Amino acid sequence: MEEFEEMLTCPICFEEEELYLTACGHNGCLKCLLRLRECHECRQKFSGSFKPIKNYGLMKMIEVIKTKKFQPPKPEHSNETLYFTNENWRDLIVNPEIIDNIELGNWSYPTRVQAEAIPKILSRQNVLVESWNGTGKTGSFAIGTLCQIDPSYEALQVVCLSHTKEIKDMHASVYSFLAENTGIIVEKTEKNKLHGNNKSYNSNKSYYLPYTHVLCGTVDSVFKYFKVKDICGECLTFVIDESDEILKSQENIQKINTILSKVVYPQVLLYSATLSDITRSYAYEYLPNAIEVSIKAPLSLNPKVKLFNIMPERGMSKKQLVYNLISNLACSMCIIFINTKNDGLELKAYFENQGFKTDYFSGDLSVSEREEIIEHCQLGKIKIIISTDVLGRGFDCKSLDLVINYDCPKNPSNRTMPNFEAYYHRCGRTGRYTRSGTVINLIEFSEHPLYQKIFSYFDISPRITNDFNEVFKAIELNSKDYLLC
Ligand SMILES: Nc1ncnc2c1ncn2[C@@H]1O[C@H](COP(=O)(O)OP(=O)(O)OP(=O)(O)O)[C@@H](O)[C@H]1O
Image 1 (cartoon, helix red, strand yellow):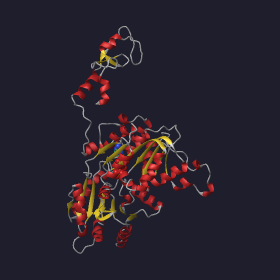
Image 2 (cartoon, rainbow, N blue to C red):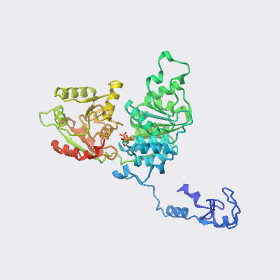
Image 3 (cartoon, rainbow, N blue to C red):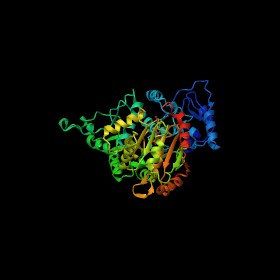
Image 4 (cartoon, helix red, strand yellow):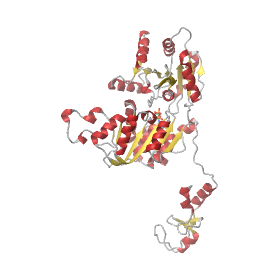
């Protein structure tokens, strides 16, 4: 409202509230304008026949504001308003090449988080953004930050921080597709590029990496990059994705603050599906005037995901149960979350003994193995993958229609408590962008108390069943959402 106060009075006498327009489009009250020979704003001479016209548009807006008919749009949580907004890309951004790339990617309309966060990013404020998994957060910060880049200025302008290599790769690929033909260079931190090999070492440290406008990397690798490159600058935008996970570590906070201290006017964007108190207190301490964009009811799971609880019958092991389930399953792709890599390897070996091949993913695989598995998932070559929580966050695979929680995620610092965030993010691997999804919790007797805490925390009541057909039907019902993947 205060922003409008100045617009409400005549800029010449500061009294009159009924405003008229000059031919050159400037405002003033009728009394003042009739006394002038030239425009008080742009000095354009008035012709003899000049007659001010009432500024109806502005008067209408003032009337609406005064009668409080104008209200900022309230976040609504239905699926339609989550994925489709009244905005279109041309209302939000002006860069024609970026709009072309968005259209090439078939992103017809901005999602709600994109429509709400992009204008705030463009105003160079520090922003905290929270929105359900799969609602387009990556696109929102990538588009918002790319639109601020001047490609002719050969310097780093955006840094995107992640906590795993997989998320870094995903950021780099989204940035690259959106930056195509814009002249904007996108790079990710790579070990060999950062340090070079000793033979080619040159005292000119900038030798190793060509300049880049956007740099995607883990906190650690970007920290090293800043050390090697000795970067300091005026305006740089930093995105911290999955900020609640990254800011859990004091070491990360120190590294991030060291990086930020090298920049005169850093803009920081904190993103997560679950903005924790840690994130908010970081913002409170280090990011003055940060504003928050929240597109979800607190503590709520994506309503498009159906949840089931299945318990092994007496005498049956969980391994047997999950084998019976997946060997009969007609899903498009399924991820089975386990808590430790040993559990994962054991489960994979059990399936293999039954003559059933599955893939296994964890942080201890080599980089090339991990890259190959992710690529195979994206190409639809993998149907069932067993994974630790490394794929619990950020992993975006369009065909993934089923999540199985083989183990209940536990809080690493108190194993008697569940890890609520990990559960939330696991479930968020399915039901992404307008699609529906299914989550099955396999619950052993000893896990009941942990799961009860999760269910009451998120206020959910998964359907309890031992009838596989019921679950298969639910997956089948969703199958139309996955046909085109
Ligand atoms: N405007 C859009 N129109 C159509 N599809 C979109 C749009 N924005 C994003 N998507 C697609 O939606 C999917 C989910 O997007 P994204 O990975 O950015 O979600 P997210 O909110 O970051 O999820 P998470 O919290 O799990 O990281 C992606 O496959 C992406 O290509």
